[in-house]
Amino acid sequence: MTGGPEPLMSMRLRVEQDIFVVRQLGREVARAVGLETQDQTRMATALSEVGRVLLAGGQDADVAFTVVPYGVPTLQVSMAHPAPGEAGRLAEQLQQVGRLVDTMEVDDGGSGTVVRMARRLPPGAPPLTPARMDEIRTGLAQHVPGSPLDELAVQNQQLIAALDEVRAQRDDLARLNAELEETNRGVMALYHQLSEELEETNRGVVALYAELDEKSVQLRAASEAKSRFLANVSHELRAPVTAIIGLGRLLTDSGSDDLTEEQDRQVGLIRTSATDLLTLVNGLLDLAKAEAGRIEPNWSDVDLRAMFGQLRGTLRPLATRPEVDFIVEEPAVPGIRSDEVLLAQVLRNLLTNALKFTEDGSVRLSVRSTGGDVEFVVADTGTGIPPELHERIFEEFYQVPGSKPVSGRGTGLGLPYARRLAGILGGGLRVDSEPGSGSTFTLQLPAVS
Ligand code: ADP
Image 1: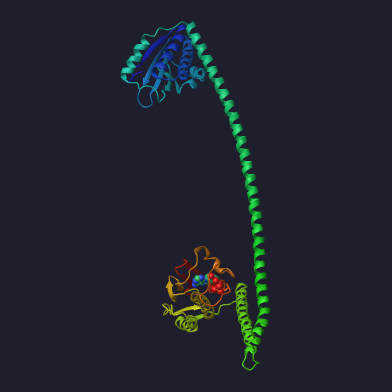
Image 2 (image 1 turned 90 degrees about the vertical axis):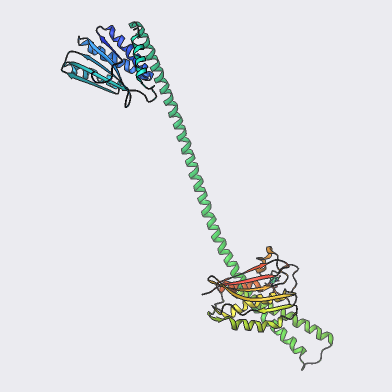
């Protein structure tokens, strides 16, 4: 070895016993430079094998141990004997040995045959500083080789340790396999369970949907039946009620025979009741028609100024209380595309209610435009409605318990009808109200229908 690092140790193999020595030395060197126990044994075994094969050629052999401390630190061993032309034989005989080290090469130089082996040191090996190398050199120089018997004992121990390790590894492997199988079984069971549950859930969802479909068909049928019933009954009632009102009028007519005061009072009662009944029947008929989808809006450009004027005129007679200001503002929006009759009907219902439930203060109608919508606002300073009843007042026949109109009577059909009409006009109707601080009903319609 020229030009490379200085050898840690060299020796010459002459006789068979030297093979044990080189084996021991190899293990010592391997240990000193930081190779792990198994690698120490591998290195020792490789050395004794190469030594045996070289000696068998009948020549002495020189052994040199060197460490390359830079790059990936490596332990290198060269074993050489002076007879050239032996490379072929050696390479063939040492095939197995090559597996014990990282690299092995056989050189057939002019001055003899060289076997070179190398083994990389593990990353955790202590750094090989020049001081450490000197220390190793001194240690090796003092090494006293043991007898072949000692070496045999060491080899036996190593063999037993290796066998133990192989057995332990085999046991570990068997245990791992068993665990893996167990886990696989578990995973499969879980998978089956999950897919069964999923299937079950899917079946449930499908059944639920079918039931929902069926229920909504039933509901639609029930709602249609109700509308039909209301329409028929109301229609049938209208004629006799109208007749009763007419007959009552005839009885109290100036052309009829005079009635006693009591009779006059009673006929008066019959006429009022019949008129109330007719209002109810008409209300029911309107609602049934709206619910049955039989109201087709008649779209036109509605002049809001004219409509507000008319509402002001027709409702003024209802605003009889001097304590209540009935204000119909000048419309801030000149017109809207809508159904004039239906729109006026909704506003009339809201204004009538406001006048009915306001003792003093004001009832105000205004209109404003918000984004793409037009909002009609009917605000009063009346009794107000508790928040939890804000939706209920839109149910048929619902009247706020204890709420008494200041004037007139009600049927509980005005708001449900107004909301229906708002929907037919493409908008909605909502309320903001607190008991004691009045109510604000807002009819929201699209600016362009
Ligand atoms: P009604 O014919 O009784 O007025 P509606 O459907 O128009 O029927 O109204 C339902 C109920 O909602 C009324 O009976 C009343 O209790 C309440 N309500 C409606 N509008 C107002 C309002 N402006 N102020 C206070 N309460 C109202």
